[in-house]
Amino acid sequence: MSIKQNISTVIELLPKHVTLVAVSKTKPIELLEEAYNEGVRVFGENKVQELCHKQEILSKDIQWHMIGHLQTNKVKYIAPFVSLIHSVDSIKLLQTINKEALKNDRVIDVLLQMHIAEEDTKFGMSIFEVEDMLNSQIFLKLQNVRIVGLMGMATNTDSDIDIKNEFISLRRFFETLQRTFFKEKGYFNTLSMGMSSDYQLAIECGSTMVRIGSTLFGKRSN
Ligand SMILES: *Cc1c(COP(=O)(O)O)cnc(C)c1O
Image (cartoon, rainbow, N blue to C red; front, top):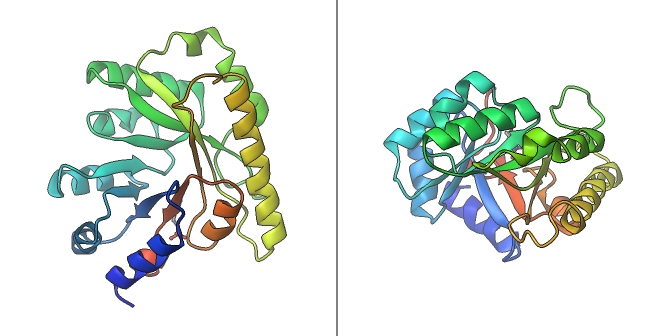
């Protein structure tokens, strides 16, 4: 299958309200260009250096999403251009993003990454940590970051039921925040869940943004 066919197959399966993030990590520039020529404008990368390199080379109308774990000392490299950071998992990281956004005279949109999977290797915050952060004095002072939603990764398992339960619990928390902390804040509208193996389940469970790599670009070697 060609990238062109892969993209049209996936796009046909996505409801209008679901945004496709084409996860291009480890893939060469030419493949991103192919996807771009098929109309893809949102790309996701998980390494700062690779993200910056590709952003420099490729068309300036691309929206670049940082989807991987982000170290505070690397925020400065992506702050000038990144359009959404999916992986905020601490107030310290949020403060750094705020500081670098201010230097660039912009407001950076972010998602809070929630820990929903069984595996303890996956990054992310607990419900308690998120509530604590949103209630903190530090958070109130951050003017150059905007939390626009949540991101989560389900357990890597063959059990659709387990995956669905994790996605549904994430959606419930998302809706709780919409009714409470983000009441009348229409920008809090993004629920990033679903990858190649589980994006259709994620959409059934209320996802508004899917991060799809191997289904579009082929398997990665690492
Ligand atoms: C790699 C990655 C994806 C995409 O994974 P595929 O299985 O290739 O679709 C999605 N989200 C995150 C956070 C990733 O690191």
